[in-house]
Image (tube, rainbow, N blue to C red; front, side, top):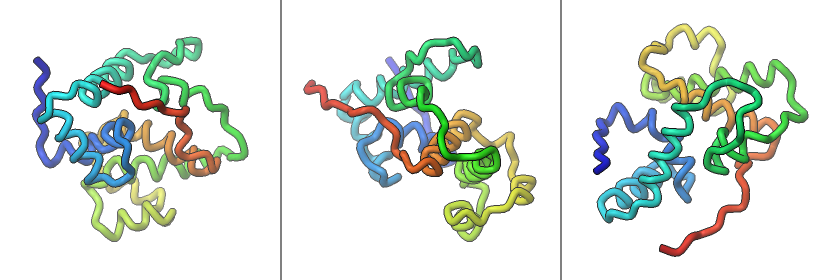
Length: 164
């Protein structure tokens, strides 16, 4: 049996995982799809979340490791994408946005708007309590922001519906 205990504080940290597994871009829909999956007993999204967690947890930084994660994640096919057309400053800027997005529960609405509009400053990073952040969410957000800068977001392989 697989139990999930979520508080409202956990939801923002889980959003990248929900979004990666959901068919919707709307955060509310992502959560609703996940909760519906749990309550209906459908294993697909729940199993996907478990598999994603296991693959990420065992991942190291050995550059020669296989791309054996789910295709739509950075540990899978999506992670093979080579960088093109962006510079080091772009990557640093993407990292700032990734931190801001992952720590959104610590931001005011105005600060989060600045994150979304490329106006969040490097100095504002010092206001974040990184002990309350999810490091994997930061990595996932970084990948998304880099894809956006490269104009290839969402960079996911063709997905096929599997009938249950």
